[in-house]
Length: 487
Image 1: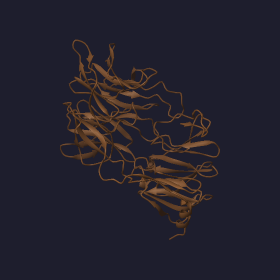
Image 2: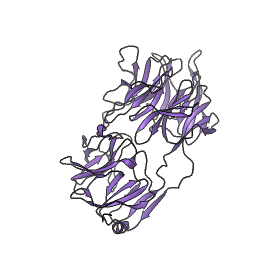
Image 3: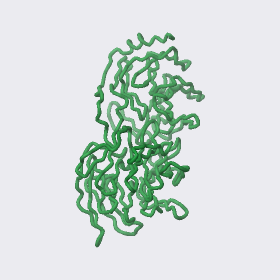
Image 4: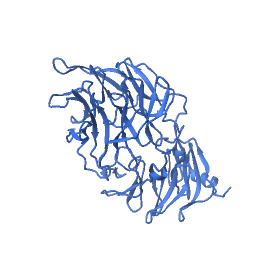
């Protein structure tokens, strides 16, 4: 998190935060309250920088997933924020909490992104509309029945963010559009770039992974939580596999189990294992004080390569970069480093015969795909030439695919008499979803024969174009409409 003067000048680091935050609010005492990650509570940090402190903690026993979109109320004595549940943000709660005592009051039972306005009203979003009601700041209570005041406001269904803001002079600024605009499609794409639907359902998809026989697909579906689902392509059936904040599924070589990254409430992401048919309990494979992310199984299923991210998400300057670690399942199951440096190494991918490991590193100053001998010692080869992420081998080991922006790249690989990689070539190009960050989990997969790719694309069906709308003197209109008189 950084700050910069409106008069210009260099930005200043306040504190380290994850790649995606869920709101921040600058209080009158020069303290910033913010939501650092999807499954966390509200934190605070001095605007001058330094260590952050926890203000609120989600209560999983009450179905709380996380605390989002804080606003410091006038006077700096209390904060307003949204409590996400495990349903959707239309069923979230908007609360006010006194900072000195921690006393909390539920203001709205069904709504998200609450904001207190200078007119003395609480405005929030539900089902694509803004609703408003008079708000008693001294008692932290809503007075009267909320009424709709603006229709057709775009709301992000995955984060609960409503796209509106206001000026103290009384103008309203908002983005119009449908709140389900995050819908995506799963498609098959052949090597020429021709796409066709994989399934009819549309969701916010992430990190698809085909089973070894190519008949089932494990996929993360993002709603308020993100869970692993398994799609049986022969039957057209979609079944839920996990129930926490999970993503990055990786099938074991025999197709019987699925490992995935599990980001349960308030804990750094760990790696868990569960039977692919949903039977049995979740088994925790790797967990610790730093986040870890799934990577790849060795062909014999005895070694799991994964990314270890020794980053303090709260304070800056405490990272040695992402590293690649191994977990051997045929011994003590003690994690051990494999590739570790001041650069980032991530996205490990075993070759089909298990003698090579592809991965991503930024040692050159940008992300590139490399291959290294496994278990070593041995050679190391740079595969990509103009940037690359998300490597994936064909099942016969003769090709290595990777992403370069919107391009799917292919490199021919030969191991006889020695390792040799061809010049990368573009297979196809298109507006398909990439990973959330360059070193993040792979957001596509390849069929066993290497002829088709599972890709994620934005839904292109009928939609209402988004517009940026300014309503002048809106405070006057709000005061006239939201009288606060009980019905």
